[in-house]
Length: 618
Figure 1 (cartoon, helix red, strand yellow):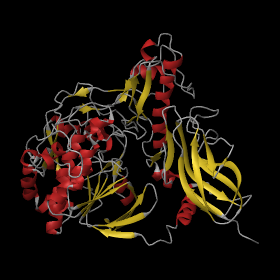
Figure 2: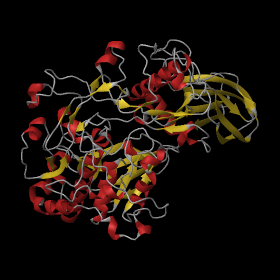
Figure 3: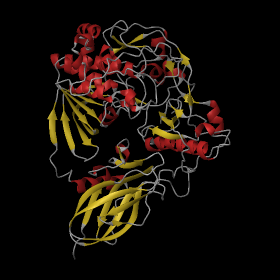
C-alpha cells in the first residue's frame, strides 16, 4: 500500500506576509504563532510563500483556523479568507464557521511535483486567522485535534525532535523586552555581564512600543537611590500620550539603546517555551522563533523574568499569586473583604482619522449590540477601554483580546452606519487599533518579601530599600455605567486614585523565594494586588530592571545567588543603586546619542507626570 504524500505549512513561516500580521501572544495555548488579517475592515494584501510539492497528484487542503466571534455570536463570523494554490483559488470560504480552533476543509487541487505558490487571500480585513495549511493525497486523513496530539504532530512535521538545537551560554538571561527587561539587560552589561535579552516581538518596549502605544508613566531619579532611572532618559520618548501615531513611541531609540551595548545579545521574535529546573535552580530555557519555529537553548547561572505574565517563573515552578487577596490576609483596607479572581484588564487602544470626504465602514454586528444610548460617541479609545477583568488573563487571553477588538468594531459600525446624527464621524476612518494586548496584571511571582499596602501607607523603612515607586494606588475596576449597560460584558474601566508618598521598595521583592537563581522585574514582582496598583508603571519597572541588572553583576562577581546579595553584599548594591547605571547624554557627541546606526532623533526629555489625576494612565 502506497503512503500518502503530504505537506505541512505553518502560516507564520510564510516568506511574504503581505498585510497579514504574526500573532504570537497565545503560543502557550496554541503551540505556535499564527497569521491574522488585521485590516480594520479593509481586506489586506495576500500572504504568499513557495512550497515544494513532493509528488504529482490531487491534494486535499485543510486549514486550521478559528471563527473568532463565536463566543458572542452563533452565526457566520467576519474573519473570512480563501486559499490559493498555484493558479487555483479554492472556492471554500474559511474562518467564518465553527466555535473553536479546528480544521476546515478548503477543497482539493491537482498539483504537479515541484515548487508552487501558496497564498492566503483575505476577504474582509476583520482578523481572519490561519495557523496551519495541510496538503495531503489521503482522502481520509487523521488530523490532530487535541493540543497534545497537535503539538506532537507539529514538532514532527517541523523536524524539531530530530534537530539538534543551538545552545548558547551567557552570564545572565533576561526574558521580556519591555522597559524592565531592557534596563535589566543594559545595567548588567554595563557592569561586565554577558547578557541575552529575549523578546517575543520584533520591536522592544512592550506596552510602550508602537504596537501597544502606552506612554511612560511614574517618576524616576527619586531618593534614596537617585541614580536609578536616569537610564530611561536614554531611550524614553520625547512626546507623551496614549494611543498616538507610531512615531510618538520612537521604537528606533529603544533598538539603538540595546544594540549599542556590546555585551547584550538581542533575540528578537523569540518566546520562552520551556524551562529546565534542577534542585530549585534553572539550568536553561528553550526559546522558539515566532516565525520559523526554530529553537535555541540558553544556559546561564542567572535568569530574570520580565515577561509580565511571570512565564519563566511559572514554567520553573516558582510560587505566585493571581487575583485579589482578601482584606485580612495582608491587613489591606483597599482589598475586598473576600479574595476573588478580579484583576486589572487588557486595553485594546485605537484612534480614528479625519478625512476630507465621507468614508464608509462595513456593517459589523456579531453579538455586541449598540444603540444611540449605549454607544460610545468618541473618535479614539485609550486606557479606559479595558476588557477581561473577570477572566483569566493567561488561559483566556485570546478571548479577552478578541473581545476588545469586537467592541471597537461594533461601536464604530454603529457610529458610522446607524447613529442618528453622525456628522462628527462621517468623514472619519479607523486609523489604528492594537492587536497586541496591553496587559496590566496576571501572575505575581513571590519573593522573600511581599510588598503590601501597609508598607507604603506607613512608609516602612527597609534596609534593602531599592527603586522608588511614585504612582498612586491605581486599581482599575469595571466602570459602573458600562456595567449597568453590559453586565458581565464590560469593556470600560474606572479607577480611584489614592495618592502616596514616594516609597522605596525592598530589593527582596525582586527575586523568587523558591527558585534560587531567578530575578523578576516589571508587573510580575512580589507584591499584593493592592500594591501592584502603584508599582506597575513602566518607568518604575525600568528602575526595577536596573536594580536587578546591577544585582546580577554582583552575583557574577561573587558567584552568589540573588538572595546572597541581600545577605552578604547589600552595602555594595546600595552604592551601585545610588550611582545608577545610566549615562549622562550631555557628555556624548550629538551623533552618538544612543542612536548608533539609526537616524538621529531629538534629545529626549523625561515626561515627569506629577499629577496622577490626569488622564494619561497605564
